[in-house]
Image (tube, rainbow, N blue to C red; front, side, top):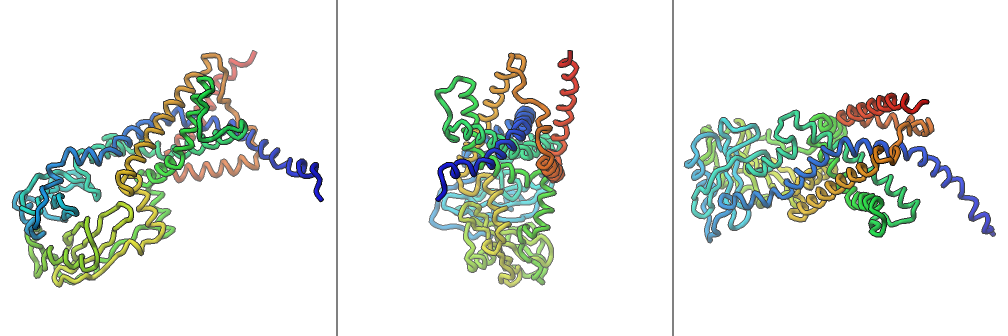
Length: 460
C-alpha cells in the first residue's frame, strides 16, 4: 500500500520544473506582449473599427440600394433572355458577362456588363424587374462577392484604407501580430489566474481600479481569443506577402480549391439573346442553359457566366455561401445545351472546404446575420482590449513611480535548450510572415538601443 507521504512527495519535482521554466519565460512573454500591444495596437484598432463597420455593411447595402435590389412580387416572370435583353437595351455599351437571377420573390435580376473605363475587377450591374422587365437602376459591382459601391468602399477601407497597395501593409501587419498578442495574453492570464486560483472567464468586480482593469482585460481576452485567432489566420490569406506564402503552402500540400474543367467544348463562342458577344454559330440561349443546370439540381442563388473565349461553354454556379454551403458548378455547351462537366462542393477536399468556410466566415457570409453579429462582437471586444491595455500602460508608466513593470533582458533567464528552439521558431515564423519578422527585428533593435541608453544613467 502506498503511504500518504509517498502520494504527496513523489510528483513534486515536475511542478517545480514547470514553475522554473515559466518563471524564466514569463518576462520574455510579458515584454513581447507589451511591445506588440503598445506598438501594433494602433493598427489593430483601425482594423477592428473598420471591421465593425464592414460587419454592418450588408444591412447598409440593403437599405441604401433597396430600390435596385427589390421589386414588387408578381405571379409570372419573364424569360431570363428577355430580362437580359432589357438590360442591354438600357445599357448597350459593353459586353454581358453574367446574369444572377433573383433567388427569391421580390428580388431583382442582376445582369453584369463588362464596360470599358470601370476599375479593375468591377462590372456594371443592371437591375431588372423579373416580372415587368423594367430596369430599376445600374450600379458598379465589385469582385465575385458582387459588392455594390457602399459595401465595396467599406471593404476597401478595411483592407487598405483607400491607400492602394501601400495601405495593405497596415492590414497585413495587424493580422500577422494579432495571433501573437492574443496567445501571449492568454498564456499570461491563465498563469496569473491559476496562481491566484481565480476564475478565468469572470472579472474581479470587487478588486481595486487597477486590478479590475486587468481583470476585465484578461476575461474579455479569454472570451475573444478563438475568434481573434480565426480572424488572424483568415485575414492573412488576403495579405500581399504572407498571403503569397500561404498560397505556395496550399499548392505544395494540394489544398487548393478545385476548378471545373471547361476544356471539353468544341464549339465557337456564341451569344444568347441580348448578350454582348458576336454570334459565331448555334446558341441554345441562356434559358436553355438555366434549364440544363436545373436538371442537374442546381438552384438559386445562381450565376450564369457567358463563354469568355471561343470553344468554351457557359458556366453555371451556385453562389449560396451560407451554411449549408451550395457551391456546385456545371459547364453547359452553348451549341447543344448539354452539361459537359460538373464540380460538386461535396467533392472538395477537407482543406479546400475549410479554406472556403474560413473566408466566408471572415466576410460574415457563412451564418448570415448571426455571423455578422459575431464579427461585430469580436470587433467590439478587440477595441475594448486595446483601450483597457493602453489604460493599464498609462496608469503604470515609469514616470508615475511604478518602476519598470516590463523589464528587459528576460531572454537571459531562459535556458539555452529552450531559447534555441524558440529562436528558430521565431525566425521561421518571421520568414513566413515577413512583415511580422521585420517589425520583430525592429522591436529588438529599439529595445537594445533603449537599454544601452539607460545603462549609463543607472551606473554611479
